[in-house]
Length: 576
Ligand code: GTP
Ligand code: SPV
Ligand code: MN
Image 1: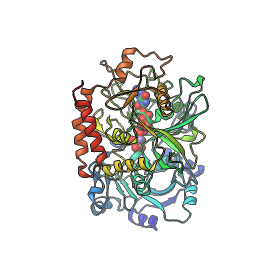
Image 2: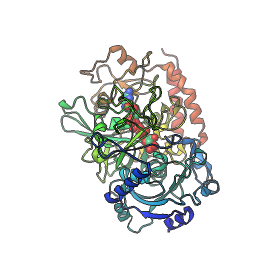
Image 3: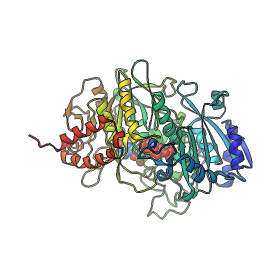
Image 4: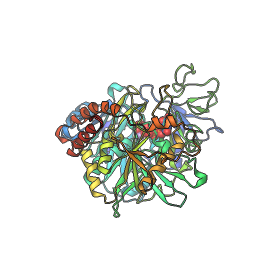
């Protein structure tokens, strides 16, 4: 009924119910190759790969055009754009009228979460973009399996998507949290258009999670195996383009000693309290929509293997014979490169767009954990928050307890990146890396986190990391990537109660010698800077954090006000 109603409104030339089969995908891809939506890449160097160039004004999420249409403004909260549902019907509704004239409307049923898992949820996206269909097929369990899981029930999240005219002036991504419905028009790009991802699995799911006592988080999930066979799972929330995919696919420099990392998820985690009082994590996605630039054999060899075939590349550069290229793939750009806009590369600007992406099935990733599709999920030993901070924030610190960890997450800041349109490199508060993704009032979201801490009898330890601290010359002080393992090992040792830590105003940092740096060429001076907690620098952060908290008025949980007061005291009080 919903599909019929949508078709009456958007008036497509035909309606196609997607089954997700190979044959269906092949004919879709063929169509897109014909009309130029896709270009086939080099048959030997990039077998099964295609390139899509999006409209140059449609290359990243547009947060200023993303709305929560709750009935009451206060339920969207001060950090979301709010649009009254009636206004959405008046302003956005007409953009769908006849929007699919002359186009095909695809009906895409999909499951978020492993098939058959009690925690999985069904969505149905209606879209006029075959590129979206091809991406959804990789990113979710799409087609017949989803229709089967739905099995005649009406318990699904409807998402209506149309490319419209791709003009940012007529672009809206609107979420109706009470109706659990999504409308997106005017963009074909990633998080704006693949409605299962940020729109459903984070914004709508966060509302469901609040009501049903679970959590929907912008987190990777990784598995860490120790030499004695002990296995630990960790969830890490970093803002967009701040290192989730890379950490999830980390190749251990100490693999020969039995320290190994495997991947469960790289972007989103659905977390539930288990009967054992621990927090259990499921990756609702089936693929990766990952940042391409910076992905190379030295930084992320697992991703390189994953995207070596059957991958959709969006907005990368290519050689004339169709070999994809991007900054960070290797040292020397090949001759005669064609840039992400399809023009000869002038070598002045970037060849690949800084937010160019790969879409690829998780099954192609050599580091997937055998438990990545476990219907019950995996139990978390630790949660890691992190941001991109050139200054102030140390490499790693541990919160004193879960409640303090919520304060650490609620106050985290990060420099903006190319994953969203707007200025890049500006520090903003991005609590739990959820600023653009929380579907309700963030003050209530903080309250929900605090509540979860009480529900869990064995809550995960909470840490904060920063891989991006720089020296005066602008160079990253920490080698990052695979070497981040060393920080994970300290965390596990802390969880097991066998690593030393030192109190600072922000939390506990590794005691001298507690970080395993064997075989790492890191100067003692750089290590000292990396772990340094400067009271004056942190004191300078306080007014901004306080101003951020003030936006929530009396809706902010009292625990957080108290924690900020205590923190302020610690960084401003005279030392003895
Ligand atoms: P989204 O998909 O937007 O949510 O991003 P993400 O959090 O998965 O970020 P990703 O892992 O794709 O990394 C983004 C950029 O940061 C890439 O260019 C990486 O090369 C770079 N990066 C990731 N990890 C590290 C690190 O440990 N050190 C440094 N210096 N750069 C890193
Ligand atoms: C992000 O921006 O956090 C992403 C990419 O993971 S997108 O799917 O566009 O949201
Ligand atoms: Mn993301």
